[in-house]
Length: 274
Image 1 (cartoon, one colour):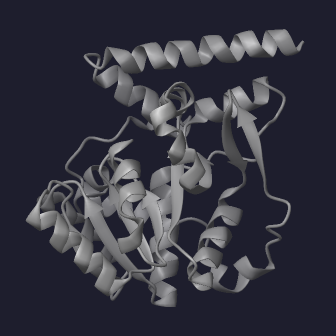
Image 2 (cartoon, one colour):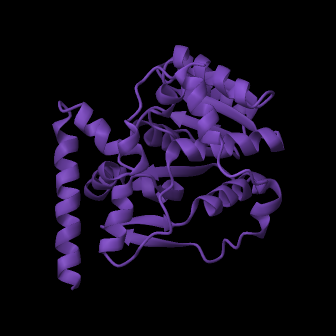
């Protein structure tokens, strides 16, 4: 069995619970946002996140944007006025990186739990499969998307993936992609162009996204396809996959500085609170 297939099957093997019956009984009224270094983050657990996304799908009032947040993204969002619209657009902001949870606890607003992107993607795919919701894959390279499609079909036979388009396009091709999205009106769009490109594209093209729940998945297609090496288990179990990616690509010096200032700022603010 190849790495991509193994990853899909492992990620989807959460608890064997039927959220199709459970999720409506989850009380979503108590969900609140916490301020983490001037950036709002939803204080929510994984079950609540699934329930809220499914509620968005059923209400058909989209497009809704789901943003996964790690320390590097947080620092870019807080210091850039040009990117603040991303937070205004986001219906749901999920703490993916463990650093966000650490910062929240240090600042006196602990989060319920970290929500890993890959596991959450597979939760949504599994439920889409059971409810016959439609999925559109947009981003990465076509060879990777084909592998992701194959892996998902193998794990969830008959899952309704109604479109898959790579994220490298422009001009006439982009117009065709937009028209495809408008006509197919998928329930869920996994958008994998990388941060903040995918969020900027979403912001500029809302009129083509209809009722969709649009989930920014960064480089998840590359990982799910098995084409890109995932973070070692030690980093993954501690929610530090984002930090491993930073270490693995030291030429991205701006990321190293962002991580450093994130921890320094968190420690400074927690000291001032005391």
